[in-house]
Image 1: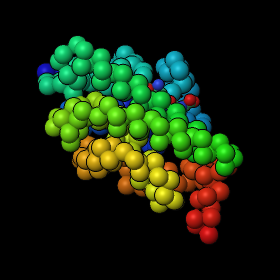
Image 2 (image 1 turned 90 degrees about the vertical axis):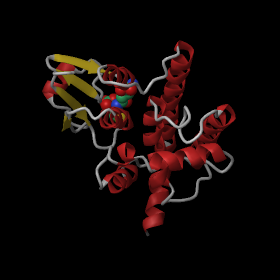
Image 3 (image 1 turned 60 degrees about the vertical axis):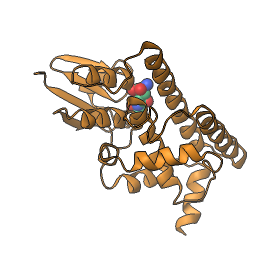
Image 4 (image 1 turned 90 degrees about the horizontal axis):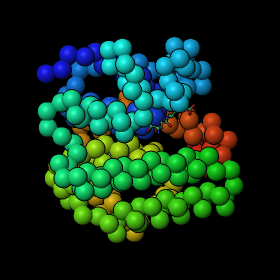
Length: 225
Ligand SMILES: N[C@@H](CCC(=O)N[C@@H](CS)C(=O)NCC(=O)O)C(=O)O
């Protein structure tokens, strides 16, 4: 079927990298992973990464960037598909994947907010975004029914943030979104999603949060004290 050597240039906490790892695992694709320090990017990485971001996928001597592109490529080179065949449905899935990226930006705003007001505003933005999904939910176990899709590969890493955030406080982000809560639970049980990060991911993410010098860092400090 497919003879190229694949290497995913990665970072332990990156949710965009996780999308690619989940796709690799779902499609059972042999690959290597190389982890880099994003606060001290190696020269070889700067030379091949146009945006200076992970994930990158090296395919023999070619380099792909942008997680959505990488996931679609991995999906296309292997049997079966994690995208719908119908063009309109495929476009819809891509749109909700893009929405997932905007949720990730809001999550970053949430853990970086420096004041209680800014933090609360980001919390409300998250509630609002998940409420959009709730109102448009047509899925069952997964986004497209019983079949796992690339949309699920995007939201698994999003929900994973809240597994750690839930240990700090109850931020009530999913209080009014029962379908989203069930979806979160289904994705948490999926082996590819569980295996997309290392066992010490929760501790690494907590450490990352404490280093933000943000409102959440202070909550975490109080939580530990
Ligand atoms: N749109 C990109 C976003 C990737 C991204 O933001 N990666 C972050 C880590 S999670 C990164 O590499 N940041 C390094 C930097 O911006 O310097 C994608 O979907 O691949």
